[in-house]
Length: 256
Ligand SMILES: Nc1ncnc2c1ncn2[C@@H]1O[C@H](COP(=O)(O)OP(=O)(O)O)[C@@H](O)[C@H]1O
Ligand SMILES: [Mg+2]
Image 1 (tube, rainbow, N blue to C red):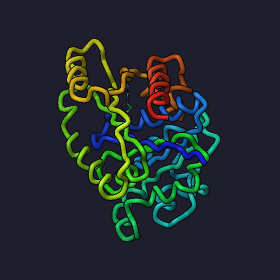
Image 2: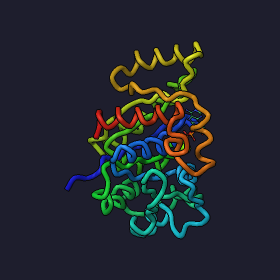
Image 3: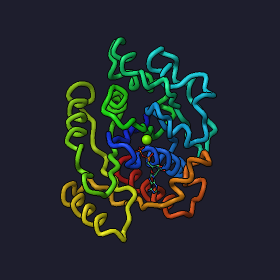
Image 4: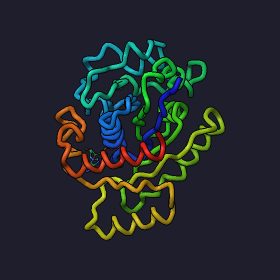
């Protein structure tokens, strides 16, 4: 049976566009006909809210799935915008590091939990929290690839070595085949000299790992979550939506 390729959207910096990328890439891939599942691993539940789901209305979230062994099919939400399915987050997940430590195989709980639904999808996108904690390690442990969103500003590369060390640690401990699918430039402002300088540095540093698609700064991407829809649904002809549609085509060609 063919199973989904899981990709972790990760960078321990906050506000670099992880959730925007997870939500819109999931939607754009689904709109290309790829069956897509979005996993919200961030206790802030921004991806969940981005699909118009209120965590307080949920009977169960990934907390129950990963800590209490509630089957994934019982927490999975379907019928959402763009046809994306969602494993939702809840603020309860803030305390999950400690709860996970007390369990067997704490680093591979997500991987095991996903096994029963992987066959239903062609791609699973995992939105990680802005920390390199057990939740992020579970994301990396369940993934075949990693997308690292980066804002083109000074200090963009700061923190990268800690992230690459974490990826190496996960490869050694639980997931030897984990690959970097690509580095993604987000919130790109072509009029800014700084953005262009940093972008040139990223091209030099990452070469083929750098995704060719660039995500521009675009207000529709910031507005869409308050309407509970991905920008590719809220305003499909906006520059931001078009960029994520292009990213989906590039990602499909490279990795799916
Ligand atoms: N390309 C973009 N253009 C404009 N605003 C963006 C863009 N990408 C993200 N944002 C906004 O920036 C903020 C941080 O983005 P988010 O995706 O939540 O980052 P992260 O998940 O890495 O913390 C959010 O308010 C989001 O709406
Ligand atoms: Mg986020």
